Image (tube, rainbow, N blue to C red; front, side, top):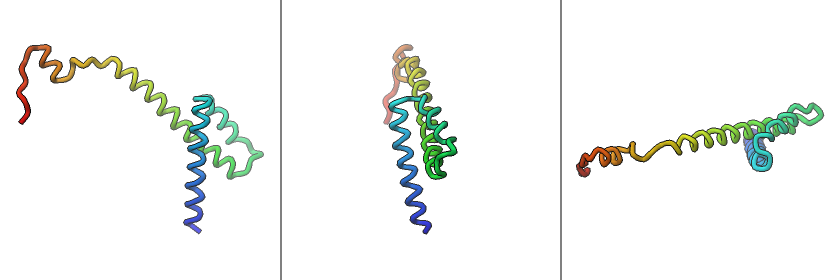
Length: 100
């Protein structure tokens, strides 16, 4: 009984992840509101609403990852290479000893 429940749970999560990826690729962050409304729809069965909640969680995770990627890329553009030790040493004319 437990193994069949775990298998069903894993399949449900995998379907939700695939659905969220497709929705996020198609609609972007606007898909969050769509799935949120679907998850609150009382005319659906409990299993369908649970699937929508899992999809919503995955969409929110994808949105956070996308926002973090935009932030990290923006910061990476402003990091000049002269602040590395080798760049700083060559800028100041200091000869570095090779590592042994």
